[in-house]
Length: 518
Image 1 (cartoon, rainbow, N blue to C red):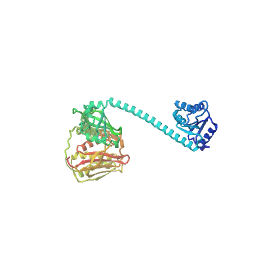
Image 2 (image 1 turned 60 degrees about the vertical axis):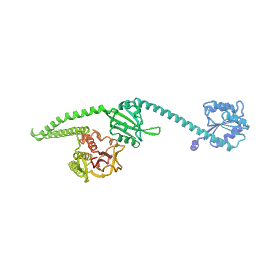
Image 3 (image 1 turned 120 degrees about the vertical axis):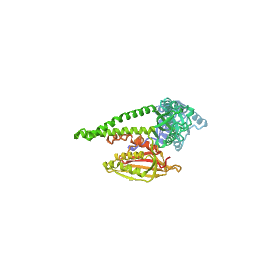
Image 4 (image 1 turned 180 degrees about the horizontal axis):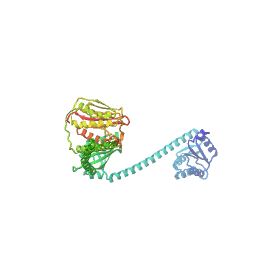
């Protein structure tokens, strides 16, 4: 019973014929083939039945009392509910004119009585298949029309936002980074006209110092998909330099891969931020130095002996004062580097000496935290500021040690590389094909077995005041400026710094430096 109830009929067929013998024969034949059959002897009854529940196909006799088959078909085609139902005439009238009239009123086929069962079944199946295909095509057309309508509305909405947005927005090709369109805000901030921008690249328009790497980021969009809040020095037509944040999304325009660039002018904010940092840093340094001297005097015992509780409070005050002093010094250091007030005193440096000295400087910290330091030095000379490079390596080693567990290992090593580094979509760097026209490089790696860095943090940890965890500044004593300083030092050596990490398994920081003074 269950199987029978699940056997749905192949199709619903309405048979209209005033001869009961024909109705019985057709009904039995079609039912046996799995069709649902409704039989009526009058044209008017057939019209009511077809209108109430439209069948998939109608078999219609021509000669009937009250209303003949041609009139029934005409009424079916005049009704929206029944217009698309295929009608096959079955009649004893075999004259060509009768057939022509049948097709003229909307019939799809004409079978002459007496008929062959196989012929009737074959024609029914053919017309049901045609009807099914027509319905599928209609459904696809409706869906396509809806998609076109939705896309048109979306494009209109995008165009409205694009034109009226207060943020500069541009669309450029991925292949060549050429501008296809820009909005009024972009023209306003750049000082160019639309004709001057369209078809040109940022490099051709001289829109900044780092347009080549920026174009490379656009070309890597098919792999990365997006890029968010990248700081960029933007040059206007008049030569004015503005600081902007750019976000880039990969979009498709008529089958062409394009980049949607949205900018945010942060020039004023950047200026105020730098002024604030500089003012606060200088104003804090003097009282901090005085406070540190007072704490040292208390600790020396010259002003009397402190109780155990007093010594504990003194230690806490000294630790926090030292941490605040480090923060102020880091801020001043970074600001001086960015403003060009600190110059790299470059000489010939031995890479092995740098690695060994950095390891020795951090050995006490490693021993205290029970972390094993492993150094693989490389005896080769590079052109650089040994003090600043040592500052970079000790900072990276300090981070690796701080975020390791007792018993973990930290490696620092160096190798010669004939390869040049390029920026990857994730704001990291990877080694690419050999560049025989470039000097050799030394690649220094600092690898740990610590907690690792989440993927969403890899792009921002080299920015100021960015840390993997907000609690790190309290628990680990960091300022959030160490990696920003490292990046600045490495960049001033024409080098690159990046990180690769697997959460829970550790991180590897890479420092790529040219061996010559290029």
